[in-house]
Image (spheres, rainbow, N blue to C red):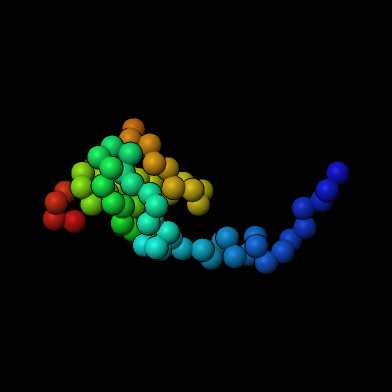
Length: 73
């Protein structure tokens, strides 16, 4: 059985931040518009304004997990 040792990859994952360039190939699962980094907690759709959360470092692109933001945000 292989043992998982500590390495630089684990440390790098703790400091990784989502950037706009990471969203190039992704689209909103509801309206298919572009996504933008909203804050450290999620990603917002430029069309329907839903915010999709980041949970345990993973972007959750499920419509039922999204929250709506107002137009002024």
